[in-house]
Amino acid sequence: MFTKAITRKPCKALIDGISTAQFCDGTPDYETAVKQHDCYVTTLRELGLAVTDLEADERYPDSCFVEDPAVVMERCAIITNPARESRNGEKIEIEQTIKKFYNDDQIFHIESPGTLEGGDVMRVGDHFYVGLSDRTNEEGAKQFHEIVTKFGYTSSTVPVTEGLHLKDFAIYLENNNLLVTSLMDQEPSFQNFNRFVIDPEELYAINSLYINGTVLVPASYPKTKALIETLGYPVKLVDTSEFRKIDGSLTCLSLRF
Ligand code: CIR
Picture 1: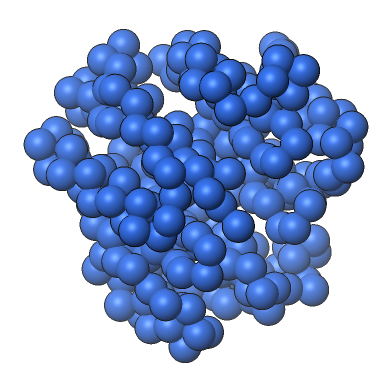
Picture 2: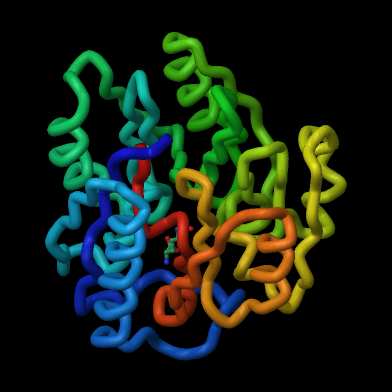
């Protein structure tokens, strides 16, 4: 059960956020992004979360994607080591906020040469699947494992070969249900889940977000919305079209704990 979330308002420099060709359909519109972010925060609050919505930070174009510089759980918090230089400083900023919720002896760090970003970390119960991607390396995953196992959690790695982060290609919706791409459907670690392969045209909607029984789904992906409803979840649609332009999706806009 989540009770809290941390978000950060998008900054004007958002238009310079890192972008791959994956969802390359223009530059984000700042004003629209601000409105969409407000709706996202409102939705989290409607679901009962106490949201700490941090001020925009113009130094870091991608800083609204707070999921990447930290991974939070009940017993500890891990400040990550984002792989891209333009994002690395976000870890220093997020730690200031994490310190309001965790004691110093509960806060750990991924150190170079290890890199890790929260978008590559998918939690299932007390287990964490860590995607090995362009952003998260073996050393980062090893350090993550050493930290979480001290607190009674477990972790294992999964290769990410399709694009940015693990949670763009596989997402856990509780109740043993996993949304996947056809490639992730073959992943040996995922064979015991109820797997649902998302239409490639709706790839972006894999990154839906389970919060306390409800699933947030990005607007404009009707097949995925219908599938999730069929699975019995109440759905709330949230428009993230401006964040999509720089590879941002629902989970990356918050830390939930
Ligand atoms: C980046 O490339 O780092 C940002 N433009 C997007 C980060 C998205 N983060 C996430 O899915 N966890």
